[in-house]
Amino acid sequence: MFRATLLFLSLPFASVLSAQTRIEAGVALGEQPYLSSGESPRGLPSADLLVRGNAAGVHAAVEYTDLPELGALVAAHIDAVYRHGERFFFLAGAGPTVLFTGSSDMTWNAELELGRAWRTTELFVRARHYDFSYTRFRDRPASPTGPALYLGIRFNLRH
Image 1 (cartoon, rainbow, N blue to C red):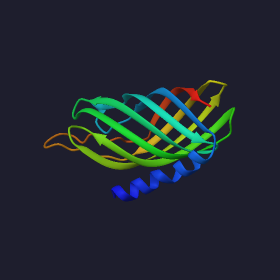
Image 2 (cartoon, rainbow, N blue to C red):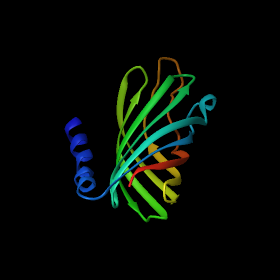
Image 3 (cartoon, rainbow, N blue to C red):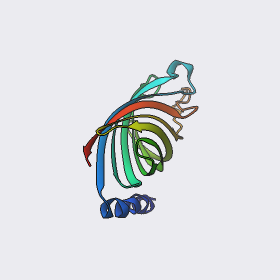
Image 4 (cartoon, one colour):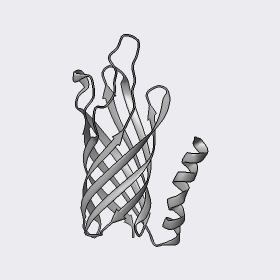
């Protein structure tokens, strides 16, 4: 599984390194619904880094939430992405997600973004879906019931 993930992530690097590379960093605030009504919806602050050459790239994002029945949850997403458009853009990607809750689990995610770019700044809305399920003894499950929705901003670090 690890080798397949590594191969999947290395494919966009060839495209990114062969073209002019853009590096962008940003933050987003999201919200995700959960099965337990006491946990739904939960805020998801997120930090992200987007490295791309022309249309292909790699997007890494780390988000945090605190679930009352589970505790702290940190999710790290690393996606191969494709972006279409410059001023107004559409971005789609998929890749592995590693979840940390005292132990770590791995799953897959898919993301879509729509945004508006200026010379040094981008505003975007993102939807990300990833499946995971945690059930502790005699606890209700702490699982999402739908995609996480985000509003964010990214800044161009290298053009």
